[in-house]
Image 1 (tube, rainbow, N blue to C red):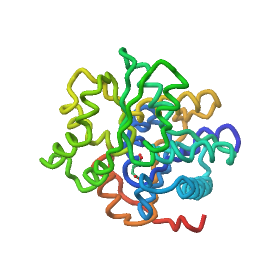
Image 2: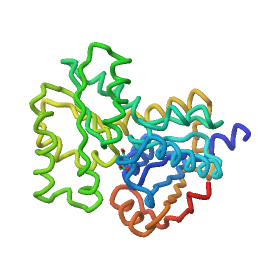
Image 3: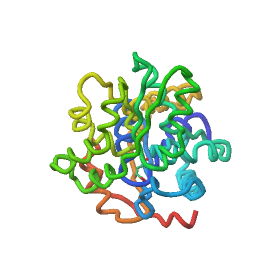
Image 4: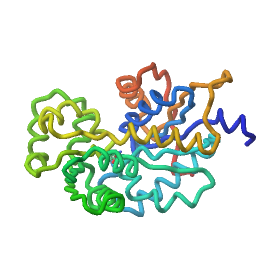
Length: 275
Ligand code: DGL
């Protein structure tokens, strides 16, 4: 790839399904000139209940698919895949790959005053202990409290954000977290930012809620700048997005239209097992 086609090449973003759209949305806000190829693994979601080997295999297949689209960099928008597969895939491919855990951890380390951070995520993310490991590498004096909240994902996917049951489930999972003395909490799962206002209501104003998507978009910006790969928007190729899924394209498209700040007219289905 020459320098100009490298600049206009898309960024690949992938997730186990729709949740990573919250990361794509943040990238579109902060890097409006970048083209994005998004892949949502809707046939195999959720990743949060799967083993590390499976999550690594799925991530490798998706990266091989995204490379067929000539992506210049890849963002693993899924917290579970970032926690369990990033270390395994980072050096395997000749394209820079970044995840959301390091940026999210860094934002929380900067946000906490009392050195006590909460992390909520899927079962697999919490079992991996990756957020705690990264935070403590950055600041060994910080105490981290992690909690898996597996029901948050289906609540978001079923559009239950404003349903009374959501408030009850938030209380069920977060009661101990609220009493733990944390002053910053990482939403360590792609879906949780879509429940942010409800979580904030329950946790109260004294706790800073950290969405790793924001810091991830900033990291991507730095990565592209350092490698002279930023799209300066000077060509007509800028700002094109394409969306691929492994199943249920129409359901994904409808959801995408509720998350993305522009119309998502089409979603394409890919047989990801072929990659
Ligand atoms: N995308 C996943 C994450 O951020 C949540 C959904 C799933 O379990 O696959 O951890």
